[in-house]
Amino acid sequence: GDKQFTHYAGYQGAIAARNILLPLSDPGVLSDVPACTFTSPEVASIGYTEAQARKEFGDGVVGVSKRNLDEVDRALCDGNRIGILKVLYHKRNGKILGATIMAPAAGELISEIAVARSAGM
Image 1: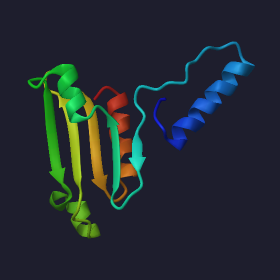
Image 2: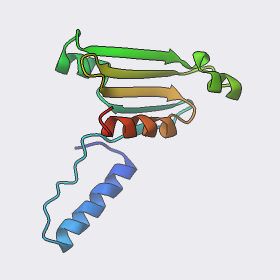
Image 3: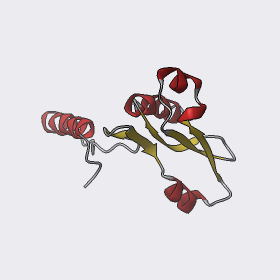
Image 4: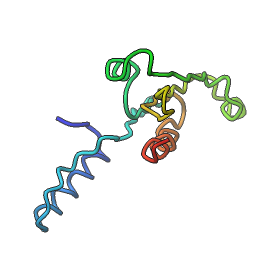
């Protein structure tokens, strides 16, 4: 099936109920659903993985920006040194293709990238 996350299942349930009660045919499928696995540290992602992006767009088009958490001032102040932020982008137009974050509060952080991605950034 589609993505196996409770927030996404709730969304799909609401769409199914709306489709039953109103004459609509929304499939209830979203192309960009942020996902988070609540481990320690959390792992969150949205969009393409690096392998998927390279397969879809080609090696020369996919850019990768990585930052270890021990290079992020806020993380250092919070005492969080273990983790990584990885953003994939289209080299020609700069649009975000996907992102993965492994860090404390990655589930909250990925939502900022999701908003930027849906805005076409």
